[in-house]
Length: 184
Image (cartoon, rainbow, N blue to C red):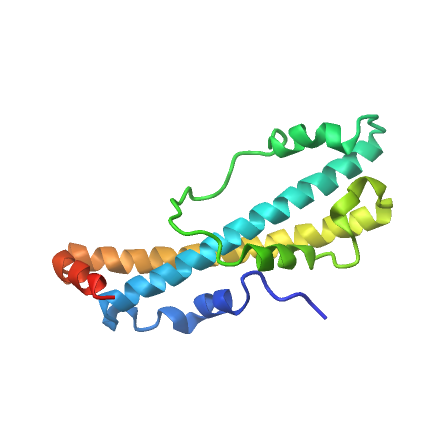
């Protein structure tokens, strides 16, 4: 059995080609609601990716520590691991987030489910083969998650573009929109 995709059915819905069909004919409030839906999924995916990347960094560093016969403990290396010293520049789009992850416990469970047979609570005690299995599973999960996140960001950009077009072309009235949102 394979693990469900990152973001589950909420992201599947956003990434379906039909999600943006007819967006030009939908009302402003509807388009803004769709954008908020996409924003929530992006926040959830971003949070999940950070959890996953932290675990992956720890597992990879433990494998490197062993290969180099580094005498320091993994705990001693945590500041170095968590400082992102070894990573390249961030590739994110620097989006300002106004919402929080919807269900952090479920998102953490998804990450933990990527390597269900490997207990990452004591990485230093795991045999090499389990660490390598975990590293492969986490890396594959990160690739899939990042791909889905980029897709959600594209949907967000399309929705924001449609909203911007409406304001630019005079199809949207800010006062009317604020009044309508005040009623909800």
